[in-house]
Length: 184
Picture 1 (cartoon, rainbow, N blue to C red):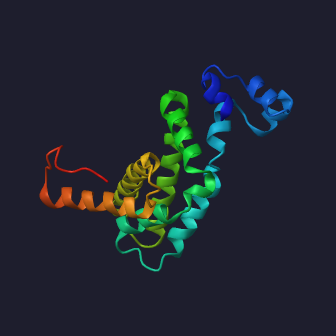
Picture 2 (cartoon, rainbow, N blue to C red):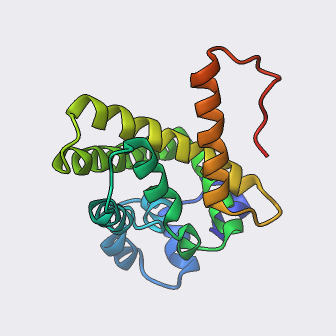
C-alpha cells in the first residue's frame, strides 16, 4: 500500500512490489497473478463472501428480504479487513483506476449474486430475490462509502439504517428534491 501511495498505482511494477516485500519476483507471482490482486486480495473476497452467505443462510427470518440483505452486510466486521484509514486508501485507489474498479465491481456483483441465490434457496421468489439482493447491496455500498468518509468513527450499522430510512422515504413520497435529503 505504501509503494502505491508513494508513486501511484499505475507507476508501480510487480518487480518493485516484490523488492519492497523482500521476496523474489517469482515468489510474488506465486501468490499474486498481477499487481492488481495485491490491492484486491487484501479483502479476501472469497472468504468474506462465504461468511456473508453463511450469515444470511442462518438468519431465522428472511421475509423482509431487503432488510435481511442489508443487515447481513452491515453486521459483518469490515474493520477486521484492516483499519478504516487503510480501507479508505484502498477504496480511493480502486476508484481511481479503471482496471481495479472493474475487478472490484465484478467481485461485488459475485457477492450480490450469492446473496440472491441464498434468498432463492430460502424460498424467496427469484424476481424478489434479485431485486432485494441488488438493492440491498447498493444500499450497503452507499452506507459503506459514508462510513469510510466519516471521521467520527460512526457505526456502520447505524449508517446503513439511515440509508435504508432514506430509501423508504424516497419510495413513500416519490420524487424527493435533491437538496431535501442528506445523510449524516
